[in-house]
Image (cartoon, rainbow, N blue to C red):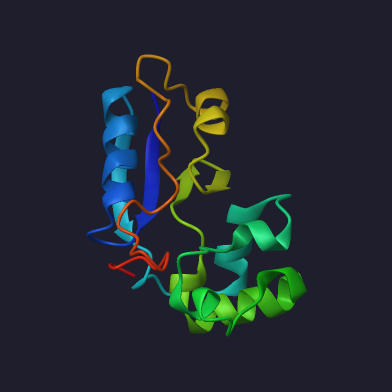
Length: 140
């Protein structure tokens, strides 16, 4: 089993469920606060690998919900600069296992990467379940 460095937003219900899934599957989770991490372009960029820039973003972030940031219109350099200024924009969780970095908790990709077979993987563990009627996360 793996040791997963898990960058989360404290008190995020989805991040809590994601960590539980990893632990139940036998992995060791070392949780870190994504908002307090001293990110640089060099430390943040590896988590996004070959994902499209638009997939680097947390679409529950207020700046995106209010139209202040439009991920589809940004290149990698612009996206990273915005994320360094406002870590709420970063898609969560960010995870590291050794030299392998990932962003987001797509259950199928997680199964292929670390193995979660022993668990019920039908629940959506990436969309904020604490959204208001307007679609905004109450705990951002």
